[in-house]
View: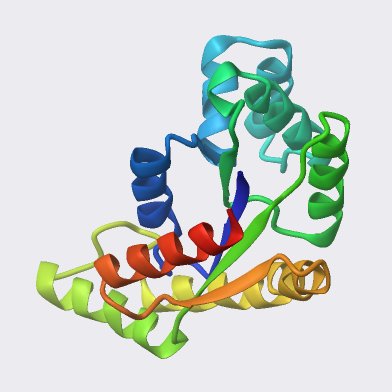
Length: 192
């Protein structure tokens, strides 16, 4: 099964992807991790990415799809994968669909982790208060609000894209981690 985990920054996608990887054996395909791995491995695409990133530019969708294609063709993806952080735009989703179609595969399920933005921002404020300051430079309420704005502007339209395909299921991402994990397992069981 190929599935996409969706939700705004801080919604728990990475946590749930790791749990799914352990329980289902599907690799978590994180575009950030894949870009860093391709650069470290010195692949042709990795070299291209390094030059682009060293220049302070964004890696194009075509290159990201190339990296995903390389990674998806590894033996551990034979029974599916979890797409984490990708796609982020409708053109990326269309390119991913096209890449999978050439392999007689498709996205089977899109799970949205629905969360309350105010709670996410309050969590950042609580972390700052507990630690006496921001743990990371980008871990501030202002940065999170900006990331949320970008998410709703660029990525949220994908929910409708997948809803029209009948692949979207929404899960309460505000529940405790164990409950979210259980809800996701039930969704996968129904879809399987």
